[in-house]
Length: 74
Image (cartoon, rainbow, N blue to C red; front, top):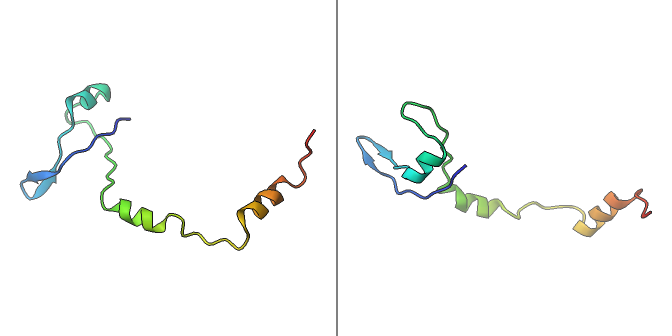
């Protein structure tokens, strides 16, 4: 799996990106072969807003202590 950044450009009524030659070569991308593209654009902001918003009823240490109960230290 490769990662790269691209700037979308107008292509007819759509947007298009170019895949760098080294990525094409390393991933063996061929014409007319289906590939999967993961788009992470505006979602970064949403993820940052959500991250850390989980509210727990118990402190983390108490949960860790409950997990450790029953395990012997031998």
